[in-house]
Image 1 (cartoon, rainbow, N blue to C red):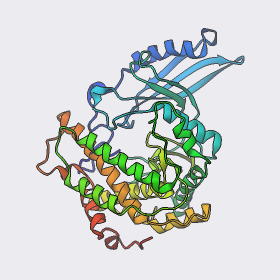
Image 2: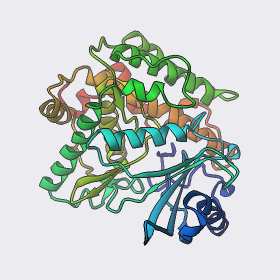
Image 3: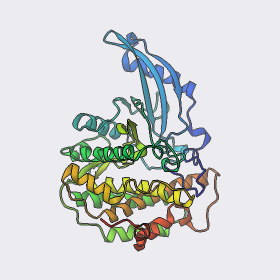
Image 4: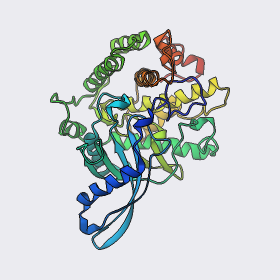
Length: 395
């Protein structure tokens, strides 16, 4: 996620990351090999090769790339792996909890029960003893990812692609949401996962949406504890809480972090859908709104930098129309859901900026709302002036 700095040259992946939050690659390789012996057996003769923590790893959890070789069923194969490790407490985590077991269960279920391409999850290790933190191990997916640094609409393989290729990327990304939302009985997956609340997840869309909004309120209280309050976030929570749309039908499994920057593409089609830590039950529009807003977030940055951006991409009407063609579901209240996405991103960025300040990388602003990079956009969405100024038709 972006860090909250207004300087568009900032490396979003490095801000608010303390120097000791990165694990030493050589030490990790040795410890992982010892753990792997137990996972695959000594007879499999596991070996660990190149190990690296990518520069562009996310800030919510540490990502480690490891090449490992072992023998299974008489064949010796190289496995290009990804380790997702829960952050240490000294890293001032972005989220209050990291349920890697749930992430593993969700990815496995999505891979088994839908046509959404997700990396194969090999193992989930709940104990912190082997590597110092809980982790899960999955296959690495090769391909191209729209960059966050610099944002893909500032100049990248996405912006340099032909309009036809960008349309293929856009429509195939919306297809991912359509296929995911078709998964039957998602509440059984979430209610049956270890570590989940004893309160059953609601199966209807409006109940799931209200529960999700309550979760955002709790998240903000946790993120702001011991620090300044954000009047803008609190106003958004109040306004959106009083105008919750009456969505009908069952809740679906929402990806949560549904954005093209979390997809590995080959030939402009999804080959791997990543980052499931925000998965939750909700209305379909919750994912659609997030996908639209995260592109708008980068578009507003591009406009502020005097760059052309990609204004014809992921427009509300286009996203809704393609989703309707895929599913037959009538998309409604997108403006509310895009604003809700802007609120969710505001709380995340507020927390990240608190980390930045805590690690001495920034000073506390006089106005706490200045900790939100897209402050102006969220304010305009709340007062109804955002979309008219951008000449997009409402949906």
